[in-house]
Length: 439
Ligand SMILES: *Cc1c(COP(=O)(O)O)cnc(C)c1O
Image (cartoon, rainbow, N blue to C red; front, side, top):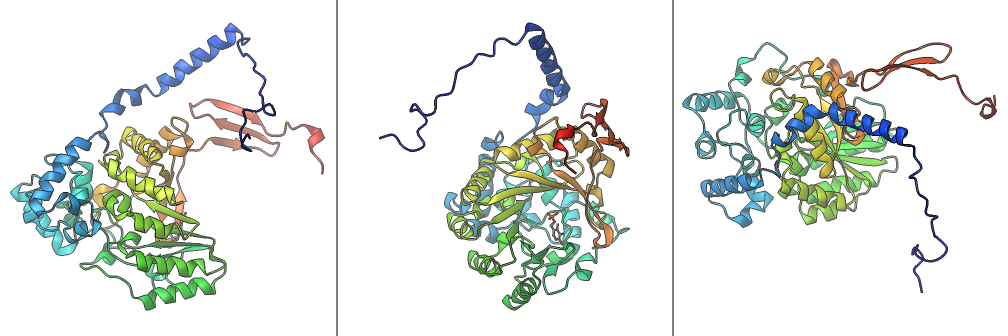
């Protein structure tokens, strides 16, 4: 007996039809157009293979891993254990000099910076660093440089969080959703971190009592339908603690979705264990936003972690920060967004880097970000195009910055567009079939 969905039986036989009747002129037109599409990305095609990616560098990363295991006295099994990585976070210059090349001057600079700001890098993330290249995008995100302490002209940290916290651990800037900051701990202290003040010098796990009060606030405000759990890093919590928080949110009828903010899939993919995924899969619907900033970070390990998460039913998004010298090259950003799709992570946001003390050297201009967006739309899959966001001062919210394609629109419904390729075209919005209009 045939199965119900077996389409090979006689009830579902499509009619075969040839399309060879398309005229040669039409075909010729299409062929020419296709040639011009290819030409419009010729600059990208010429450089794409020279952009380093985590998967292309896999053999080098294995060598780096061996060297780091030697330095730290660990085994291959240790490497698979995220707790080992956290216990062995690299946070001293003495260790670091055995892993990457550092000049005497750089030693001094790191010591100057660590007086003010914490630094630390998981052995895994350290294995993605180029030993010699000071401009390695992984090194730039994790190892302090002197610029961090030279810049004292701008705001230390926005007070935004404090003025927008109606209950412990909560930041609320929008009508129907809010953030609960559950810890300040991270597997790696990004040099571009906006929350330096919260990161302080020690790991804090906020008390169950504080978290309960935050959950009570959510319970009491039925307009809140979306709750973001972040930190620090949501995956710095134990599975048990995370399970408890998610369970409490599941029990609140007006909470429709939950989101996790974590950089672990990028900086410590071993954290994504089977146990973690099994627990998360019981808290449907669950979204996770992570942060990859460069294609070098898209490694085999990262791909495996993201695969596990998606199989557990979690939808993955990426929030990059636009960082000078790391991903401001438009080809690198395009490659990053495309690589993300291959590991089933949807590019969600690119954040403009804020004007904050200690991170100003990372800031590109808003124009730089705008140009990248112009370069992405229709030059790559719509799925690969994130929204570029400037967060306005004083908690005035995430604000999209995007190229404008609608040039004008008048009262008679005449619209004028600019196409992605720069053609100006009129579009008659009034020309509708009258039969379909019923007033
Ligand atoms: C970023 C953010 C959110 C989520 O914003 P989305 O645009 O919905 O992703 C919610 N609350 C606060 C305080 C935020 O900073």
